[in-house]
Amino acid sequence: MSEPNYFEYPIPDPYAIPVEDIDVSDPRLLEQDVWGPFFKRLRAEDPVHFTENEVFGRFWSVTKFNDIMHVDSHHDDFSSEPSIVIDDQDADFMLPMFIAMDPPKHDEQRKVAQPVVAPMNLAKLEKLIRARVQTILDSLPIGERFNWVDRVSIELTTQMLATLFDFPFEERRKLTFWSDVATATGSAGGIIEDERRAHLLECLEYFTRLREERAKQPPGEDLDLVSMLAHGESTRNMEPMEYLGNLILLIVGGNDTTRNSISGGVLFLNQNPGEYDKLRNNPRVIPNMVSEIIRYQTPLAHMRRVATRDLELGGKQITKGDKVVMWYVSGNRDDEVIERPDEFIVDRAKARHHLSFGFGIHRCMGNRLAEMQLRILWEEIMKRFHMVEVVGDPVRIRSNFVKGYAELPVVLHSH
Amino acid sequence: MPQILFIEYDGTEHRVDTDAGRTIMQAATDNLVPGIDADCGGECSCATCHVFVDPAWLATIGGPGPQEATMLDLAPERQDTSRLGCQIEITDAMDGLVVRLPQFQM
Ligand code: HEM
Ligand code: FES
Image (cartoon, rainbow over all chains, first blue to last red; front, side, top):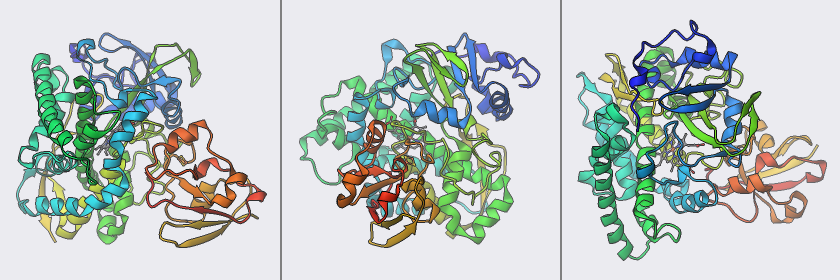
């Protein structure tokens, strides 16, 4: 993966440069939390926007809610192959995964993995998840500063993944590590490319062993994901790289996204004390608040497609083969569709109508799991703490894809 | 004014009066029938307005179109009688229609 030395120039004032020079792929925009006005200007003046730079080549940025919905639900015109991030993967280390496949292969593979996160199965997991949330929250210090990201957000999402994979519980932080490695680009994770590959191959080896073990066991009823992949007709003979790709998809899909929603919720309630009061007065708002947190955070800032034919989009002529990037982070702030979009409102009407999970055939498979984790977490937080107080500036991640936090210092106050 | 009967998974019944031209999804959300999320707002892009059409009504209602069929694949409880509520436009001929709701929306 290419690392943008290219982005070493100072971040410009988005209103002081010609609109055609706006480049929203700069990974510092999310890191420094200055992305808002860049997208606001594009939505107003150039909603389908062309950029060409040395790092990512040519790409179109789609910034309005309805245009994004259109691209996302027209998979015949907009292919997910070979990659769903702006950056192309290294051709000699491609990880095939169904998020980056078109029908019919996508449909076959998704069908195998889906039952484990289907609501029916989740209902069975709810008790276990609640117990784990309770244990984590009960272990936290009251009145003492600590990093919420590490002790709660990462810990909880990692435990959930270990549960889904039936992964050896004591070794669960390996999952976190592999997720970080998989999403690291160059200096972002402090890991260079060779090391990254070595770690991912380690992940493959580990899961290959698990798969072999589980393949020998008869298919049971309460299947974990590894067993499902081991027994599933369209997945049991997966090539190693394809197997790795699908594991990484679930590890990353279920990791950073939920983690950053957990951290984001704490931050937004602190920035909006009136909303925190609403929550204290009426915890029944939690399911609605969870959707609002996920909208407001938008844990994955974009998904990218490739045009499969010459076509027109928002008045622009797109050429077959062009990259088309759907900026969910922008569409979620589009005031044509969402009222007062820059405000965090826990009892917002139609809060579920957001882009954070995407739409169409690739719509997030883990959306109900993510919502359930957040709902249970907030139910248990409200039983225990008067306030999770943010006591310092968050440290955000440098990326144009994962929108999230490395640190969020907090102090807990009991009732 | 066509009347639609929604039956929740637990058997709770909701009889709602609606207008020709609305969709089944809108008839449910207009009348606060629980169990229809309609996350995409009726764009055939989320499959959270999944319903089962009463077999007696299948001939009148018809089957899903191609995009709808693809989206229905995402619904874990999909059956032969499955449709997406936002893709069924109500006509006067549908007075008395019975649709059941799945246990969960995807
Ligand atoms: C708040 C948390 C989450 C967010 C914001 C999120 C976001 C997304 C987005 C934007 C997509 C692509 C949608 C599109 O292209 O239209 C996606 C796909 C996916 N997500 Fe999530 N996700 C979350 C949690 C999870 C969890 C917990 C899991 C699994 C354990 C998961 C697994 C997947 C998978 C497997 C796909 C690929 C689906 C496909 O291509 O058919 N996600 N997610
Ligand atoms: S409301 Fe989304 S598919 Fe019907």
